[in-house]
Amino acid sequence: MDKPDKLLSNPIRLVVVSSLHQVASADFTTLMELTQATKGNLSVQLKKLQEAGYIHIEKSFKDNYPNTRCEISKAGKEAFEKHVAYLKKLLHL
Image (cartoon, rainbow, N blue to C red; front, top):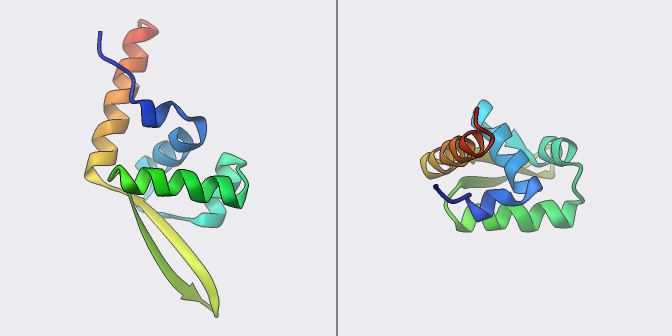
């Protein structure tokens, strides 16, 4: 049987990648709301996803405030789809 993606076994990272899989991009505040994570914890998890090449992070300013936007990469889409396939096989779906 295939193995789960250890990076996506973390609930916060899984919510981030699954959310980004459905939309073109999302900002930090939206991801905080979706994950119910603290700013610090979400920042750490986004950095891990970025380092793995699963997401792209763009930092800019919007109305003089920092704005962080994330989008899923091709590698992230593939990893998510493999992880979902593994879970489906595990659950016999």
